[in-house]
Length: 208
Image (cartoon, rainbow, N blue to C red; front, side, top):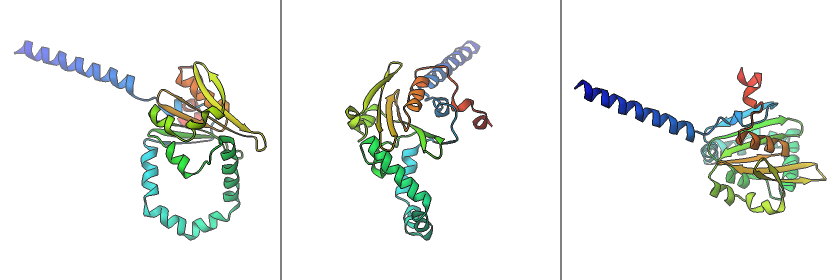
């Protein structure tokens, strides 16, 4: 009987060890560890696609769009500034940066980091299957972008000279990466390829 218990215990420990090893291999990394340091604002979601779908189908969104607060916001200087930036990003990306594009690039585990508030410089990454990435309207236009290489990964950059806005994007290891600066997208690719570099997760304000 003791021998049987010992065998069962050994099998259980072996199974737990295999499960832990598989979990370590398959678990996606913390997005904050993939982002370059120096961000001023960071937002993370476990399922951005789900949150976006919930918001788009909610009564709260309909009330917000019809409410006085949104009406006042739509007349504000901030709204005007954001609309201008959206138009400039659309030109740089060669595609409207609207709700349809946002929906197409909303994956599951996601994060966005803002590096310059005044110029709205950010990088965004999201977990998404390669087939879904290649089906996005942005990816279908990658031939129109300048192709660059970071490590052994290609990424795509286009700059609008008039507004000095940049759109850059890449895909690697189940992540879609979008940014308004080529160096930010390249920085994420470096970390995805195992580069030992200081990341957002190492910034003191984030750790605190």
